[in-house]
Image (tube, rainbow, N blue to C red; front, side, top):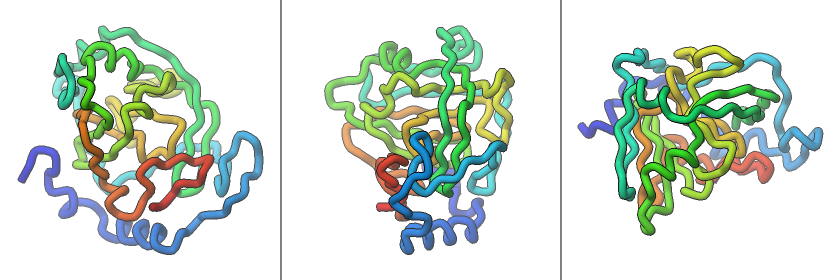
Length: 219
């Protein structure tokens, strides 16, 4: 079995996956209407931060944490937590929009900007896509242009506190312009790729881009 797919289908909650695949087939939650300028179509505002995962919440200590950045790049990197913490840190405030129809405003994040990472690794001309790999076996795909947006972070803190395990700590991707399944939790590898490769939910009926303002929930 490959390193990137450590038996995920044998571990996750089958009921959860099958129910969300059914949502995709039925086009559930699609509305085409928005309640407010700041709230995308079909979304409802929440105050808490709901916990959603595949039924696995890996425990990764700072001592064991590693992040590989590789693929179609000139300078591949392998960061430990000390290297990650020594990189320039940035703060950003953004909204979360989940494909399950909830949104949460004004989330304060701290972490390393994707633009800094891109400058370090220097993607080759062939690099057009980015694949995120997580410690629970999850993957999701974005374009290099999406990843390079100024509000994208590899985040380690939320609201001034370290990210909890249930929300993807020690570090996760934050891509606020897209539905939050694109913001991979427990990230361990960022792969720059020449060709697109749909991730876990994209292979199961979810949209390849996931723009909440266009209500791109499903393919």
